Amino acid sequence: EVQLVESGGGLVQPGGSLRLSCAASGFTFSSYWMSWVRQAPGKGLEWVANIKQDGSEKYYVDSVKGRFTISRDNAKNSLYLQMNSLRAEDTAVYYCARPNRGEEEGTFDYWGQGTLVTVSS
Amino acid sequence: VIWMTQSPSLLSASTGDRVTISCRMSQGISSYLAWYQQKPGKAPELLIYAASTLQSGVPSRFSGSGSGTDFTLTISCLQSEDFATYYCQQYYSFPLITFGGGTKVEIK
Image (tube, rainbow over all chains, first blue to last red; front, side, top):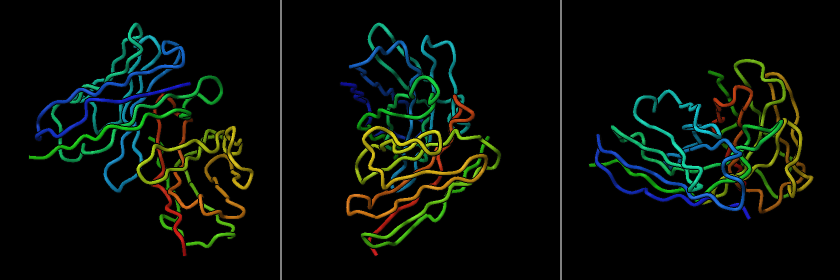
């Protein structure tokens, strides 16, 4: 059974940093792109970042470029999101998600339960 | 960046109704469109991909259509468990991805 379990969320002050983790199991982690998607309270879904299977390519939504870094450790079946210079508008539930492979690459068939990040003084 | 306009943002309907949700793209994306359902406090679930292909296990009352810039999600006979928020998502520009703004389907 595929499982994605996020951790690392919490309350942080504006300008602060936080590192999210996602522990993956039930599939060959190193064979899949991986993603972070966020959802601000009462708002819609926003894709945040993608990382290629070997970590050689990384892509970000414009609003987090230069502040967030996605990474992965295939030996540990883990995905990370380092978030620096956090702003109030980064407050959201952050989901780890697995894009499909093949023709449907880019659709998300598995999601974690989400971890809440609150940026506030 | 591919912009997406999803409408309506709120849809009031009754059990048994046929409902349609629209998603319009700022540029053509062939059929690289997916639909998700999200219930409060839960992660989204994939309903449809490739604009019209049902994900395994999704009831046949859900259907998708369209290509290019205009897409539609239809629920043929709304059930109580279908009251939720629905999102379209384009993956034409993968690994860059965009979601629509969402449509909340509420009880009339």
